[in-house]
Image 1 (cartoon, rainbow, N blue to C red):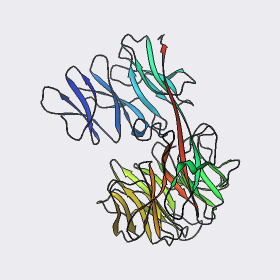
Image 2 (cartoon, one colour; image 1 turned 180 degrees about the horizontal axis):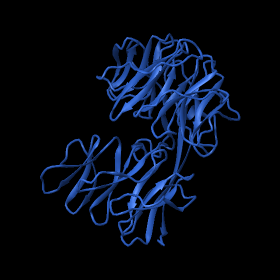
Image 3 (spheres, rainbow, N blue to C red; image 1 turned 120 degrees about the vertical axis):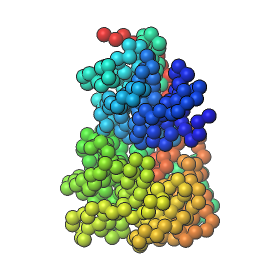
Image 4 (cartoon, rainbow, N blue to C red; image 1 turned 90 degrees about the horizontal axis):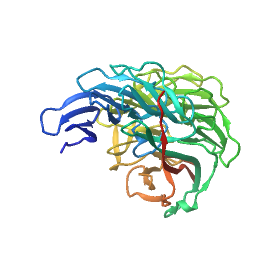
Length: 441
């Protein structure tokens, strides 16, 4: 019917849908498309009761798709279908999802972690859709994922969604592959760990966790033990990577609305913000000499690898420069052990890029996060949360290394490599549907 589009909702013979980064409206009887709004990662569209407005979410589409329950900021917007400018209803530094209209069309319910653990919030809107006052929290301790309001506004149905995501490890087989049943947990806390990094000496793990309520960076011995908190900002911090000498940790944070790259000493001191762009900067990685940092930058729908450098340890960092060409949307850069190349992923496959910007397709077809073996002879990459593969760095046949074959566990699509082990995050999900009475005062 509508090619290359994601359709969400119908009303009065009209359909609203998103094509790439544009929300469009069209009559089912035909006619021209009307542009309603634009932006990256638009989803969860809801019609107002009178059909004059749309509420929708911008950002963190993974909350409802591939990485269900993904921890990342998102905002709720309201736009009129008559060409009115979109209005941002929530802040852009916390999770705000699942908008649902009350029957009066002047109150919007949504799910947010703006005040701590996820809960249902309500905001009053003016005639233009602009919020009148701050959102109010309606219920606590529910862990909701999505909500729906009855036509008379007296009842709310919601899915209660909770999950734990901890670090696991498994030995890398010399030949053949190994089942996930051979893995063992490294952490067992009630927490969400997304990304992590192993220190160059293999003795320490850095990881992001919400043990204290929001995502912060922690350190712990690689064999297990008590974690030590490194960052303390109320914003969310993600994806740490050690400097070669283990004294510094680079990570990205959403504390200023968009993702930016930060640097901090492993003892929690000397925190520095390294990037401040309107794009999204994430997945930073130290070069083997500690004098460069590569990271992904997403501008609207296109991504590329940028590199910043310094003359000496402790020196000033240069302005980041684009390494990759516009022909490849490359993400998740990781340095080769000799520092001469970077491997990254795109929708087309796994690419190897030289520091002169020369690009070489290593794996043709969709592939997940890649990384190098410690000697640089192999590239490991994850595929769809199902299998971890390895392939010679110069090309050749891939080999299955780990089969994520336990249907009760979901593997996060990033990993950390040691000399003889691989570390990954495992998600365990619990979900139920509840109904509660609602009384607006």
